[in-house]
Image (cartoon, rainbow, N blue to C red; front, side, top):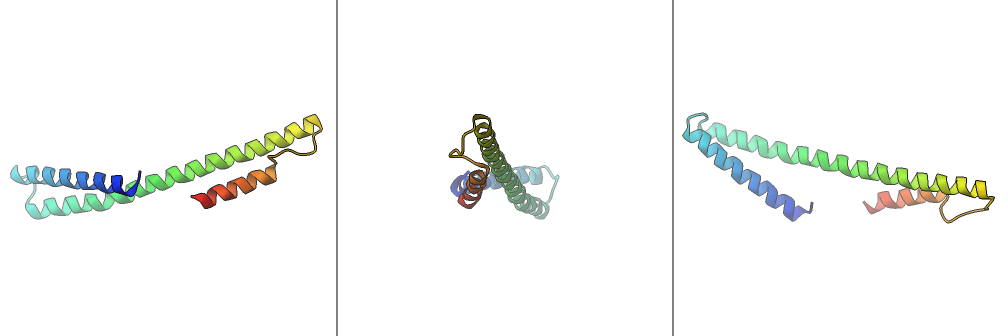
Length: 106
């Protein structure tokens, strides 16, 4: 999700929390100060959790790409051995280079 969409979503969440806080204040569940504190705390926690989830997803995607690149290199190397072919365009060393370039592109 790009920054514009993220900011729009966080703004919508903030607006909904403010409205919910207003309803709770009107019904006597909270006073105005407590409602503002709760909404503020939630608006601090939500982006932190969101960032942690995004970081996990990126790291997971990197690991999957690395695994695929290594597997492609190993399969290519094993196929070469079975066929008696000297080399191929994908070797384990080249797979490591692919992994390195993928990390740099993120």
